[in-house]
Image (cartoon, rainbow, N blue to C red; front, side, top):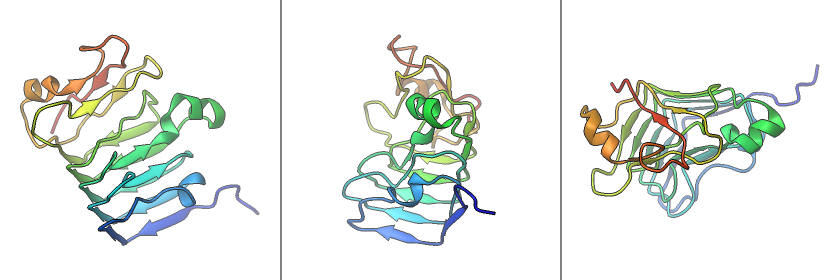
Length: 173
């Protein structure tokens, strides 16, 4: 029996120094298991990009990417409308000095139990989208700090700009 999107396993790879990021081919299919990969020092692009539903992204280390460390585009409202819910998990990853993805308000895309070590300098550490008006949940993650007030000072969401979604980060680990 032919499966429309067979599972693709991407595991145990090193992507570093001038590597643009992983995307296009396999990420355009969905049903990807992306596990135990190492990304570091990308000069452009994100660490990894996913556009179709049904992905498991776990146990990866992503550091110093030019754009988001991971793009969970399968949860964008326009793609959800075309293909259905993103139905993916992003968990047990460590992201250091890499932009952090959100689920664009798609509750079927779960982002939890990650170590998200952000740039502790000024500016926004995390930005909610302005797509759907839904809450973007990123509960049960470690943010490199335990001070929820300090974390909130660096989040751009509905609390700061009413055109953006609410970003739910509590509880923080």
